[in-house]
Image (cartoon, rainbow, N blue to C red):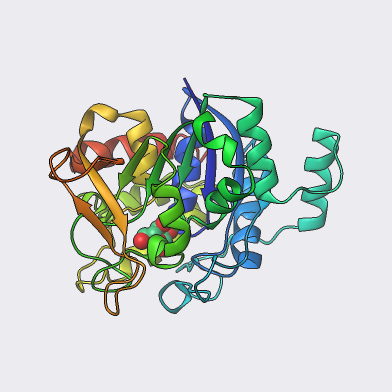
Amino acid sequence: MYKIWLDTDPGFDDWLAMLLLSANLDVTWLGVSVVAGNAPLAATYENALRIKKHYHLDVPVYPGCDKPLAAKVETAQEILGASGMSTTGEALPGVDIAQLEAEQLARQQRQPMPHAVDALIEAIRANPGQVTLMCIAPLTNIAVALQRAPEIAPMIKEIILMGGSADQGNHTAAAEFNIYADPEAADIVFNAGIPLRMFGLNLCRQLLVTSAEVQQVRALGTLRAKWLAGYFEAYLRIRSADGSVPMPMYDPAVAIWLKRPELFSFEPARVDIELAGRLTRGMTVCEFRVPRRAQANAQVAMTVDGPRAMQCMMQELLGTLS
Ligand code: BDR
Ligand code: CA
């Protein structure tokens, strides 16, 4: 049984990861902190609430940091559109944010809405040694939490994150987007002494969706399936950095691992974040010669049985769309 706190910047692949988490009966979902990433915070927070409302996710959602620790704000809007999610069909309807916030606070009998970082710190203190942090966005919220309350580090069971790469980057030749968008935050998180699993681009590139799977979603014929299929279709047309389509499944990789860990293999490594490189800022430099050359600080995901993992993803996903 996992107690999961999700840190996210939806994002279509974040959306898929959220649906997979909601379908996993071994997961107690404590909360969601939202951060600027794929788009500015106002858009990622609204997206998270749209997903929560229309897909009936029973989890509190909190707005977090709107800018990186030291870097300038970097989004993926150039590729993903202004809202950070594009569709070939009907847009996921908007929501009344104030009303959803009021409902959440009434249920929790608290006032006012806490900042996501404070809510995250509270959840870790209330569940010492039990919380797995699932991070699928720039790591700003997590780094700020560790700066504000350093005593929570040994209370965190594990960090499982989509970010970085053991080979090439996507946002730049060397760097993956989540790490590039806030390298100083990633540096704090990777050096916090917390057990950490990194699901980087080298792993995610083994997870590819085909249009047959999009049709499978569409064929369900429900409203929720129709909305999702439109975004899925747009996502399949987005070229990855090497020019190939479809784009790999990034954030869902972590959620699939929670469900089917036996499909994955890992290697221990010392992962350091390049902060100064002129061409390599945000790169995750992986030293696999541990413990000879360095002490490991991460388990780096290396292989996944792609077809079986995709099959698992589709099966779980379809169950959330009725
Ligand atoms: C990561 O960046 C974002 O665009 C995706 O949501 C994913 O978390 C992939 O590099
Ligand atoms: Ca993301």
